Amino acid sequence: MHPKVGSLLSKFPRVELVRWETPIQYLPRVSRKLGVDVYVKRDDLTGFGIGGNKVRKLEFLLGDAVAKGCDTVITTGAVHSNHAFVTALAAKSLGLDAVLVLYGKEQLKGNYLLDKLMGIETRVYDVERTSELWPIAQKVAEELRNAGKKPYLIPAGGASPVGTLGYVRAAGEIYSQIRQLGVEFDSVVDAVGSGGTLAGLLLGSTIIDAPWQVVGIDVGGFVEGLNERVKNLALEAAELMGLSVDVPESKIYDYGFGAYGKIVREVAELIRFVGTSEGIILDPVYTGKAFYGLMELAEKGELGESVLFIHTGGFPGVFHYGEEMLETIKKP
Image 1 (cartoon, helix red, strand yellow):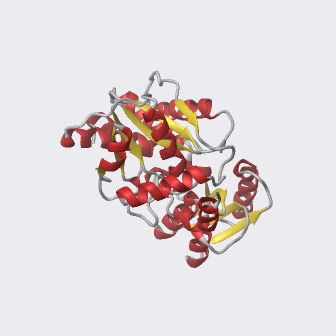
Image 2 (spheres, one colour; image 1 turned 90 degrees about the vertical axis):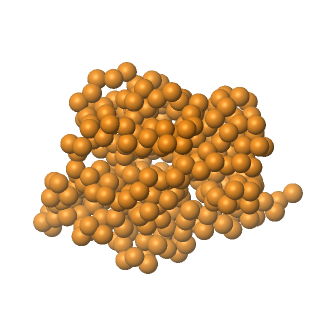
């Protein structure tokens, strides 16, 4: 851990959900194909529940909830949401109740199956976007307050200033790992949905004066005004930490293929290629699209000679969209 990052974050309540440094793995076959050294930060192995990047954010979000004496956690997302499931699971492991405010088709597969298997309370609404759920979640919180509960609201993806601290910490972790490994990165790349992970990486990289550029791959218009949102989250997190820093504009490329959650042949085929060549499973909503973007940008020479990809998890998405992916690959 970078000492400055460690010192700055030590004043914030945090529950330990990630009990080790997730490994950085070299991808020899992908690197040979691209002519660029590609490494993966295995945050799919964060170690709690289904793993993934949300666990890092939840360390600080649930630390804050516990410190404030809250007894119920409320968050939002699609029925296939990795964030929603792992949030509720982590809350329950700490003795808190959880309510998930979701949208989409209720099918017993992927994360929604896990929600039901774990006995998590879900409320599914007929809306089209996650952003439409926030007013509903606030009403649920008011309902719980009236019943004598003390709810803690977490936005979609854990994208709040407090949640952003999780990837400030991750940037400090990467710093310590590259010193041990003796490697340097020109770019650090991650999938961008709600923006909290990218904001944390940007802020953390700024704090430690990192030599790499931070690159985001938009997976499909999850939120409007993404660049501004990411920068604002980074600045709000910096203010929370008592810092006055000049956070650079986020560099974000669109590889959403038209819509969040849209399943396309190119990504399905890439998931197969990475799985069969490196033994790493990507998902069709986030990491598959982001890795597709990484490969295309690397081939264009826009990421430098050495790239680190943040594998943000999302494995249950493979099972949620498996039939669609197979049908897409079969098409002529």
